[in-house]
Image 1 (spheres, rainbow, N blue to C red):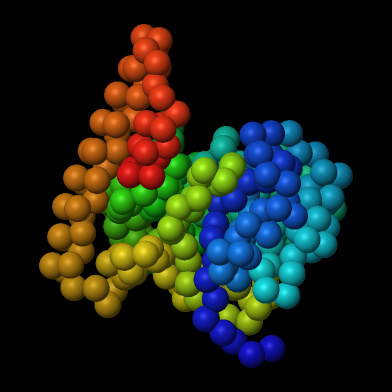
Image 2: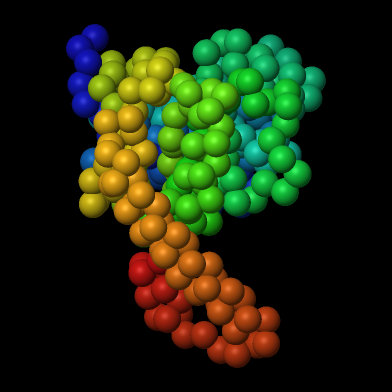
Amino acid sequence: MVKAMLKGVAHVHSTFSFDGKVELRDVRSFFEQKGFDFVMMSEHIEELDLERIREFIDACNRHSSDDCLLIPGIEIDALNILIFGIQKPDSFPDNLTFTQMCYERGAAIILSHPVKIRHGISREVEPLLAGVEIWNSRYDGRRAPRYSNLRLLRHMRHRRPELIPFCGIDFHGYSDFADLWIELEADRAAAAIVTRLISGQGRVCTRNGEIPVYDNSTDLSKTLYAARSAFATGIHDGAVALYRFIKGVGLPMPTSLRRAGRRIL
């Protein structure tokens, strides 16, 4: 196969997740129409057993097309991770053992939405990590990655300099779509894409271009972007707090206002 520059989206849920709203075949169609070459799925593990996981992997293969590849993946909230490029398991004893099995078979293990982590990173999981989801548009907003996530990646890279920056849109329904994606040069095959990603060949991109979190970025550009990130995070969190207050006291909020806020943030 010939390598090509591919554009992909990550952290995507279908109805294989308990809170997913879009059928898997429609997920592929939606992102294919938007010009994406691959979609990195991340179904919640909570209501999946061994048979259902194997069924999900078969469905990813069946609903992939020549133009858009569905890469099977799992989200495990209890461990704060995303696992991309899973293969059919022979057993599913527990979350940690399953994660280790996936790692040994070449899957990419990514620390998911760090803002949700309350009790630290699991000591058993940390050595398996390939990267950190520095930008989750559902939890961090659509303007810039969360400043604390950038700081976490920088801190973790003191021990593990090979850790990659990663992004996801945490897609559950069509309204969750955001202009946030990964670009990399690879063969159009799941294993090749995951391998290139783990090796640090991917780039987090938005409609405003690549974000300066890579070694070829100047210190000044990283500093300025960190300031922008901190500002955007403050605006996003303030808007979310206001929305929750309005909802909590029972004030009406027009649908048009909710949609406008989602587009802006």
